[in-house]
Image 1: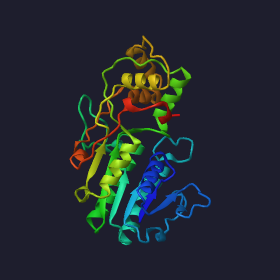
Image 2 (image 1 turned 135 degrees about the vertical axis):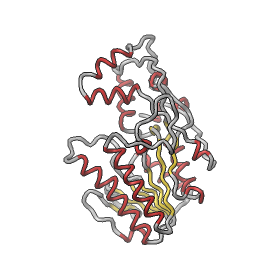
Image 3 (image 1 turned 180 degrees about the vertical axis):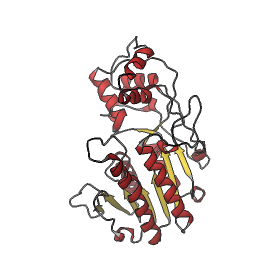
Length: 304
């Protein structure tokens, strides 16, 4: 039996679909009610206790549930991140260990590794202090569940995906796609920055690999599609995918830098857009992983 949390999310939906195609016996934990679905148990980590009964006969847990995107305006942000990303993850891992679960796979993020390195691929060994609450809570959860794994027979594996794209994508990439489709996203200049990404289907394949390979126990794995993209390239590919003509001009870089001085929030957005976020997935490739898709392979249906 396989337990999947966060089954109603972007990645969770694709994972569940793949598991069903493989004929796996699955049990799903979701904060969203699925009326009439006998294999879905409703549990909101912000207010509900995790039922111990969900681990009956479970061999593998894929833990995807958590806050990933901006939740400003929803109360005490830090407390909510800590409750869901740390406390619930630790409680889930402890209950899984006590129930005799064989393997616990935690979907973390490259943000848990801290700031990306300029002009250099970042590996699992390039650890620094994460600079936002999302990365901080993911890193703290990583450390706590790795410790649980060391003190029990349960295998703990952590995967850090780069920016994930594909059908149903959310967050900043979704906003960029909508803006390009509407025709009001500013043409991006060539800055030479490098960014890593991963298609959701390749991420699912990586998760399945880590659920089986014994060498993965106690390890952290970054996963990307093996390519590096500048924001300029991403912009052009998305324009072509949306059927939009690629502008022959672009806004100069210094204009973005000037705008970034208006507020810390704008500065953060500009840095995300123009900065480096380049990661190495050689460690998981050593287990046999090989991404099958790149951003150049996408089509309009992947986003709309």
